[in-house]
Structure formats: structure tokens, C-alpha cells
Amino acid sequence: MFNSSWYLNLIKPSFSPPNWLFAPVWTVLYVLIFASLAIYINSENTDKKWGYIFFVIQMLLNIIWSPVFFGLQSLSFGLIVIILLDTFVILTIIKFFQVSKIAGILLIPYLLWIIFATYLNVGYLILN
Image 1 (cartoon, rainbow, N blue to C red):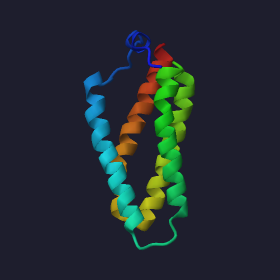
Image 2 (cartoon, rainbow, N blue to C red):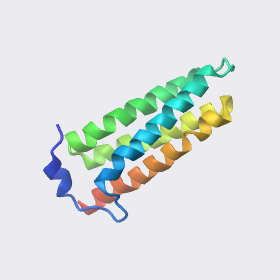
Image 3 (spheres, rainbow, N blue to C red):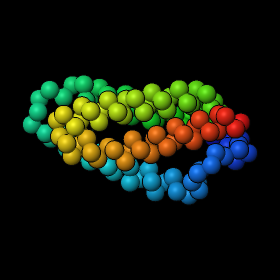
């Protein structure tokens, strides 16, 4: 699925982090994401349907971005997926924040990282 030579031969946008950084960053982000979800689930507010819907959609988009970008080697389709991901993470933050400020705040580093990833995706598309 993943053709490493394809990715390694792409012209990298400026500010591209080293490849070794992605695993530890994503580890921390997933801990924050699921801590946020746990807080949301355990909150006493009963009107949480849209928060759950947005959370599931953004997680599905998160899961499919890598196979689209790396597996299909599609920079443009990858960009569409990540823009949708950005949108649904924002919607998730809004809904989580309405139920628990802490749950919403815990998702902000995730949003910042995927906005940065969107910048990188745009850069790869322009440069390649």
C-alpha cells in the first residue's frame, strides 16, 4: 500500500518536520483525543448526539487520509480529505466545548497539528 520511494522523492514544503517526529506527536494527540472523548462521554449533559456524530466522522476522515495520500498517492484527494477533517474537528471541538470546556480544549492541539498537516499537503501538491 505505501510506496516509500514515492513519498521520499516528493519535494518537501518548507517547515516539513523530520519523519521521526510524526509517531511521537500522533501518540500524544491520540491520548488527548481519547481523553477528550472519555470526558465527553462521562459528562452529565444528555444532548450529545451531534458531538458523537462529528467525532466519528472526523475519526473516519483521520483514518482514511493516510491510505488516500500515501496508498493512492493522491495529493489532491488527500487535500480534500484533510480539509474535511479540519472542518469536522472544528465542529467536534464546538460540540465538545458546549458540553465540557476541558473536552473541547483537549482537542485544540489536534486541530493545530492537522492544520499544519493541511499546509504540508498543500505544499506537496504545489511543489509536485
